[in-house]
Length: 157
Ligand code: SF4
Ligand code: SF4
Image (cartoon, rainbow, N blue to C red):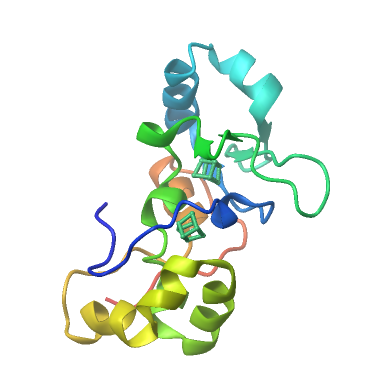
């Protein structure tokens, strides 16, 4: 997934700070485990929590500010196989369609604040490539053939 035109990540790591909502399906968790030289149970024991939906959520370090446990030394330990939502950032439905959601995100992401809402949403407004669905959890559940539990649904076509 290519980043939006004009967006430059400043590698500050803010987007990996304890907000939760980072999910992997079984295939993604297995790929992450292979990347780290672990098996799936070993990966689960250290980094993941299995949800009733069957998805795995990536754990954060303790405390409200704790980074994702996969964020070490200023980088993502599983960068080449990182979760869908991490690959998609900041091309999230809410950020390209809702200026208020954008501003909130831009407070944390200096790359976004430099880019600006108009530039980020330009591709969407000009009818460019379809944007990813707004709920990445829903995408993973659908891929896995599981029933959705909550989430925000899909954008209109
Ligand atoms: S918060 Fe923005 S600038 Fe910082 S690492 Fe994440 S994407 Fe890059
Ligand atoms: S999986 Fe990687 S990119 Fe995603 S939040 Fe964790 S450290 Fe950041």
